Amino acid sequence: MVSQKFLRKSEKKWGEMIETYMTSRTPLKAVIQIVDLRHKPTEDDRNMYEFLKYYQIPAIVIATKADKIPRSKWHKNMKIVKEALDFDPEDGFVMFSSETKMGKEEAWKLIEEAMQ
Image (tube, rainbow, N blue to C red; front, side):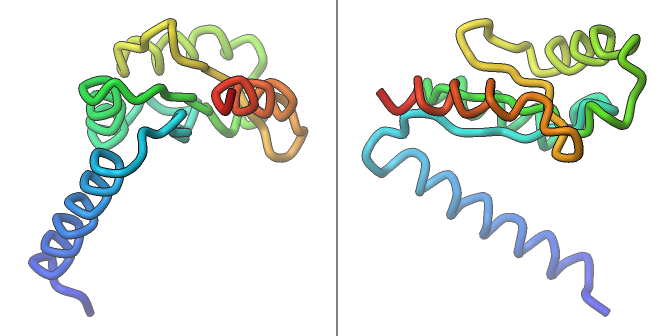
């Protein structure tokens, strides 16, 4: 069994490695951040988005599992996610379902636009 101390140490190393990669390389065109539409973003989700905004890295937020909630709750859940992230309207946001392929074309469009 893996100890909590080992896990925290590993998380810290990964975090430092990711931060170094994202801030010291050729500027990124965008970062895709995946969140679960069914739930309020976690503290890690919020920290990552805040990190991207702090370093002025464009983000494309993809809210997955849209097919797992009723269509009537999409707007409510999207609002919860955006408010929790303090979402910047300059960034892309896509509701996505890998099962139904909803949002696939929109996601690709945002990615292609970011690459230009």
